[in-house]
Image 1 (cartoon, one colour):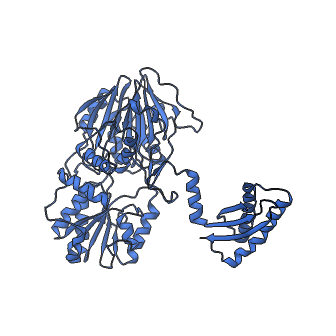
Image 2: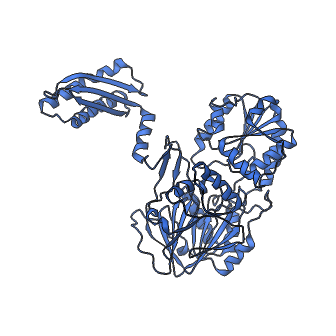
Image 3: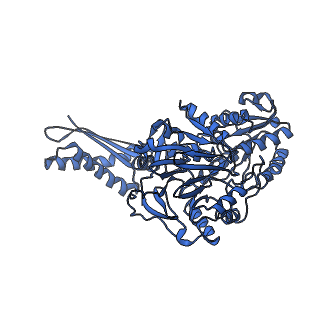
Length: 561
């Protein structure tokens, strides 16, 4: 079993007739999915998603894949295949196309429609190629065959990529729901056919590889929602992913059965559902969906709000409701349903939202106390079935944290994939398929690229560390003016603290230490203001540490007059 090594260097030139696979996101994490395939000097990209920030990344809006390894080769990119329209697979597309707007996008009707609606907000009009399951398209040197798979969004597809080096099968996100809401099954017959023809390298969704058995059917949720709706006395607020068309359809169906109107809340929710409705993927009566402004004209027991914020995102509608920062004011009569799984890392944020809603009296229904959501990813039983059909010669788990990748690798080996043909890689690791064997050959840069407002890439790990210190420990600023001739203090020291918890009288105790440090420096002839600032920083830092056992950010300013 291959695995990454911290001392891997840049990959060697790709041998003639070989295929290189480079994941730039989605391995060791849930999100930011992007994989680059290289053959014959051309590049094909599968997915380009985003990762959502955690608490340790304050102020960050999105996290992108690192395009630096392909930036000088964007002219070689023959297309971007999008497996489905979830943000962790399409959210990075606008940022890629800002660098190379002529790269073609290839995907299903709904996927491309949702991407194009997103791109319109960035004023980008892409070249796109719509495909359906069963289509075979020659994209540069890559022959791509598109295969229907079932997921928690309509129109998801896997892709078989054929080159002279061999055939790679990328599942995208998938499961094997045998009773899907849209009756669109994962195409097991085609997968078996590809398996017989020979899949040289399989890249498979690993998110639920640790979960035994099979994922429950989406249809099982409808009766649960029906019972919750039947018990609710006031408004019902349902939070879900903005692209989860299936869940919105179920909520609309149950709302109609209970005589309730549905208002969509959140810009992305309104945009995506308008697209899904226009294309016929969301089927609702003409008078069922109302504008948010109309809910005040209806009794509370006739209203359903379908909103974003199921992952505790600070600016999403549900979080703002919990914080009393939204026009919808939570009351004791409200029932709130969180209809999604927890993305790893979001547990604390979601729990804060649940507690906030409960504080205002709402009844909160979530996956922990009712079956209001099922996963969109194949569990271990489904993966075993899938591996036995695909019969891959080499296997590389994708889309998952380290424990998920390892669990998927173990399942593949149980079905007969040789241990030395299982490759567990990480973001940036290059895997070459040469003479039918997949091997790790090197590593390229694949770090986090942070989006902060309109800024892309300017936020660094160092600046995030500063933000965390400011948020956790506060800061102390010191201003001193010294004579340019003698080094004697002319003004100050003036000490200011924020988020630190010490009053002005206590801070006065640090002033003699600063005065003494600057006097010693003047006596030694030290006049460089940068050096003087470091002396002030160390003096204040020692005093703060000895006095409070805390480590705030210290900002010294020394000027000459």
